[in-house]
Length: 494
Image (cartoon, rainbow, N blue to C red; front, side, top):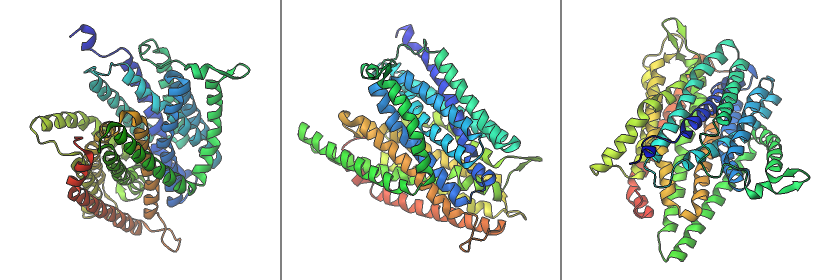
């Protein structure tokens, strides 16, 4: 092997730190959002959860558009920089401190994330040839950067925001994004070997005076901010939009599968697309419950978890740091584990991995019932309750998340690979939105509208969390029973 092939391309570390600071920005805002809505803007739990769900749902939907614009017009470097600027702007707008500035800032963050998130991973992939054995290792290193950024956000930004004021936390997140932008721009020579960085020929065409298509799209993107404002503030509209998108994507995938079968004289692609749609539904179920972290579980931590450690009170938002910490600890172990299991013929099928992931997610919610046995006089469960909950949620995530991305690339015909991946990300968008709706069930008010006492709130959280756990176990059993049928639909995809 040549010397060049032994290390990684120079650009990997530039992209690693750019992405790390972007995640610091994104998670920095997200970690504080629910508490900011409830404590500063005086929203009810249910309203805060719906705003959070609509925001995170749109964040996951945005890369579908951001990726397409970069492919066809903007080029990857321009798109990433545009995204970084919009995200930093969004964080600083939130400092206005009222509903208007929050929603406008969220709109800028959504659009910016769509451009940044969709395209920086693409640049990483293009540092390597298709058959380069270093590719998987490179993405693993990049994934670690994502989680270091999330870990820094859920510790540093969470602490600063709750201790010194939410506006300081949001401002810090904005500075993090500017740091990422600076690293990306100053290190541009390091990743210059990637293809597709420059504005495309179609993007260079003039549309009005000196303004070309790329700049017209950039200016047009600003118009998406008020659209996001409306969709977040009137979030019931998203019920219909996301349902219609899911139906459209499902129909599109099955139609493409039928067409591929006709072209190739096979009878596998339609079945594989049906399998993919089933996995999308399973994915929605998993992440809608997993994403309680930023809403109901954070409010639960604030009110009903004893967070005192040797005289120091851990901020409630900071409890979200367990997930990225466990990802960093266990991520590499799991990737090695799958290889070793495959070598001895014991690697579970994809449906079983999804089922086992859901069982661990369910167990995490049911751990709260154990915590209830150690409740103190202030109606608070021990912090260890959340430690074990997030541990099980993270191991469940590792059974499902990386496996899902790999599965999509194997199930879809090459011709519609991008459409299939867009559909997969749409399932995350729907999951986050549904997660906001699930979180409303734990609201801090009774049916008569009166605020619940701490004891009543604890009872309500425990009831909802145990119900989620039992329902998830039931879903996992259904998947296990359907394992053989799903494998048949997948036609040999492992």
